[in-house]
Picture 1: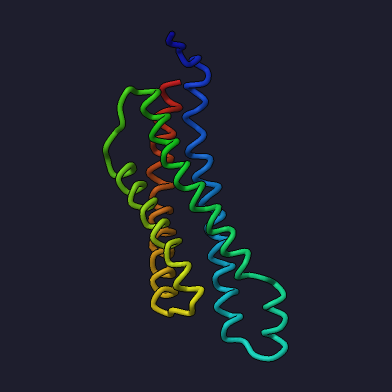
Picture 2: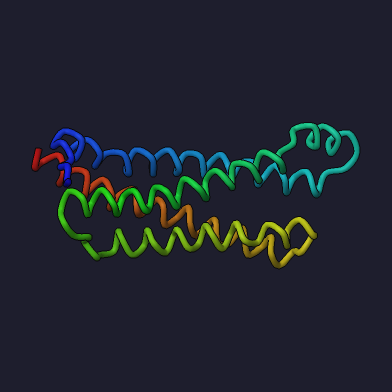
Length: 156
C-alpha cells in the first residue's frame, strides 16, 4: 500500500535544509571563536591561563564539533532526500557537489580529534585549515543556496 506525501508537507519540507544550513553556519562561527580561545589558552601563562581554563573552551569546542558533524551529515542527506521527493531526481551541479565535499571535509576534520588530543601539531594545523576552508565554502553555499530557495519560492 503506497501513501502519497501530502502536498503541503512536500512544499514546506523544502525549507528545512536551508534553515538548518544557516543554523550550522552560525554555529560554525561560534566553534571558530571557541577554537581561538583554545589556542589562546595554550599560549597563556599564569592567572590568564587559569581564567581561560575555567572557560572549558576545549570541552565546548569538542562537543559543538560533534553536533556540527551530525547536523551536517543529516542536513546533507535531508537536502538530497527532499529534492528527490519533490522532483524525482537530484540536480547534479556545483551546490550539490560542493555540499557533498563539505560533508567529507567536516568528517575529516572531526577524525583528527584523537591526534589533536595527543598533542599532534600537524593534526591541529590540518584541522584549522580544513575548517577555515569549510567556512569559506559554506559562505559560497549560502549564496548559491539562496538562489535555489528563490527559484522554489517563485514556483509556489
